[in-house]
Structures are given as C-alpha cells and as structure tokens.
Length: 415
Ligand code: AMP
Ligand code: MG
Image 1 (cartoon, rainbow, N blue to C red):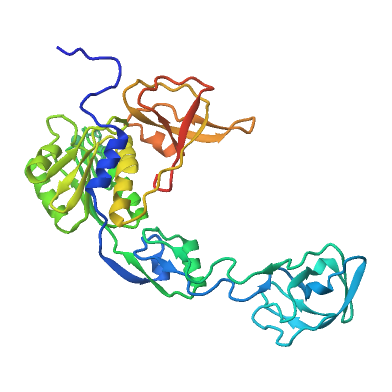
Image 2: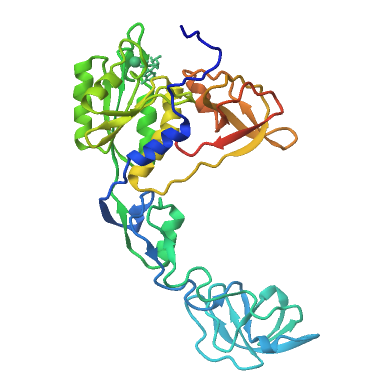
C-alpha cells in the first residue's frame, strides 16, 4: 500500500514545460486570413510580412526649430554672420538654392533647402533683421533627420505572426499602407459545468453559488480578440454535457469549460471527452490548476479548466492563453520573469510548480519587492483580483522566508 506523503509530488503528472510543449505540438495555427483596413487590424495577427515601401523620412528634414546653414559656414572660432534668405516650413519647403553665407529659417519637420546640411537651434543664434549670428560649438549635420533613418525601402516593418499594436498601425500608416492581411478571428465556445452554479441575475438556491468563471472567460477571451460563443451553464448530466460538447465542436476552433474535471462522482467531462473526442493530457504538476484537461473534440481544441476560480484563471492564463495565441498564428512569447526580494513568508510544499499571487511594489526604502496576497487557496478569487503578478515557485522549492529572492511574473492585461 502506498502511504500518502506530505509533499505534492505525483508520478502520473507531467511538468509545466512538457504540457506547453504538447500544446505547441498538437495545435496548428489556423490558415484562413482576410484583408482588413489598418484601423481594424489592431489586436489582430498579421498574416504576411509587410515591407517598407518608402523611406522614412523620405527627405532630409529638420529635427528642431532654428536655422538651416551649410556646414562650411560654421565658425571655427568666434562667430559668423549669415544672411537669412527665406523660410522652410513643414509642408512648405524653401524652393531655392541657399548660397554660401546665407541661411534659411527652418521649422521641425521642414525639408532642408538645397545648399544646407546643418541646423542651428533658434536658442543658439542672435537675430538682427535678416542677419543672424552663430558662434562655435555646433556640429556638422546636427539636428538633421537623414533619409531612411527610421525605415528604409524593402526593410520588414512588421512580420507575419505579429499581434498588431496601435504603434504598429501607426507604422503602417506612415508607409501609406491602407490594408493588411490578418488571420481570421478565432472562434471559441465556452460554458460552465456544475449543478451548484447559478447565473447572475437569478437567486441562488440553498447550496448554490454564482458562476464566476464564465465571466472571467467572457472578458479574457474578448480581450484576446476572439469570437466567442457563451453557452451558459450546463448541468452535471452526461447527456446534456455531451450535447453541449457536440454543439460547441461544430463551428469553433476551441472549446473551454470549467468545472467537472476532477475525480468526483459528478465529474463527467473527462469521461465524455474520452468517448467522443480525445484526451492528450490532464494532470500537470502545477498549482493552482490540477487537473487541466487538454484534448480534441473533432477539429476543435478542448480545454477543461478546473472549477475552482483561482485554478481556472491560472490554467487559462498559463496554458489556454498561449494555446489560443498559437492557434491564432501569433508568434510565441515567453512571459517576462525576474527576481525580487520576497517581503512575506510563503508556504509551499515541494512537488509542483506554483503560481502564488503577489503584489509587486516599492517598499519604504524604494526597493521593488513582492508581497503575498495572503491566503492562497484555489477558491480565494480575491487573491487574483488583488495581485498584480505571479510569484513563481519551482517544483522542488519549499517554504520561502522573508528576505529570500523569488521569481515574479507581472500579469498581462488578461487578469
Ligand atoms: P469542480 O472542478 O467542478 O469539482 O469544482 C471545484 C470547485 O469550484 C467547487 O467548489 C465548485 O463549486 C467551484 N466552481 C466550479 N465551477 C465554478 C464556476 N463556474 N464559478 C465559480 N465556482 C465554480
Ligand atoms: Mg463541478
């Protein structure tokens, strides 16, 4: 007989990294794409490499308000007087050639007139009528933006697989590009399972709780930019669950459920999945979050999240999010993690990789440290809401004392 131990090791579970690798291998990015106006392309995944069509800047221009001069006229010692022969505005260049001994009043973004190559800041000149005096200390070519210093023709400005940000849209606009090819939106169906769940707006019976997971999924999926199908609450009745799975699989790329994946009597999800689909794994050495079921129903990827609210969010965040990003065709990105001093005592048993909830902030000495949110149970949803980062504790790590270093992973905007 195997006696229970006081650690968290489970020989039947796979590691966090193995689970991520399985997901990566099992899921192929969708291929369909569509052409959209760049304004509609934000938060979409680029389906082509976009090359620069024009140099930016396209012409030599001034980075300052001042005077455009020829560098030959810069004084080696004392000062020099130049005659101002015109003005170059942004969008209204000075069309004539500037001769030696002459200069042109110039504004930021305005084209440098022929015969000039250097801009003197207006604060560094003395003006008397059309005569300006400049002194030493100016560099040849200063305050001038060169052709192509931002982008040169033919350079990749945005690569396939990139999730487009507002700055990316600006970059496309700076090239005069009106439309781009993006991957079609992913379609994701989700529902909650459990006889104890009550939808908000209804009055819970004795022993019922409000369904919160579905609201997390609704909002997180919306932020991810996928098309959602909210299928509500499905009761712990095998026939109803099976029916819901089949409906969800019909038109969606992925299906996400919460609850019903543990080994309790009323947990039918894995059983049905085995029958009508395929299970790729379900036990991962991660806390909170065991068990997470990952598999397929027809062509749709299936994620069965644990019911406990913190476990559901954590598994969504750590596994489903990268999986959906892969399906969307987005480049994979490792989350940023870094080490800080822990300002709380943490309780942990060796055996699982743990994502505890932390608050990253400056202490009274202005050092960046991390505090625990307190109780770490998988049902303490307020811990997720208070936190701004995960404290990532490796499998073999035990309790952590104040003053020790720990890894933290700041939340992205999904939580
Ligand atoms: P289960 O995974 O179905 O065994 O559920 C584990 C725990 O999470 C139980 O306490 C459930 O009541 C709770 N739970 C399950 N689904 C939800 C949900 N959608 N919203 C809030 N709590 C849930
Ligand atoms: Mg349940």
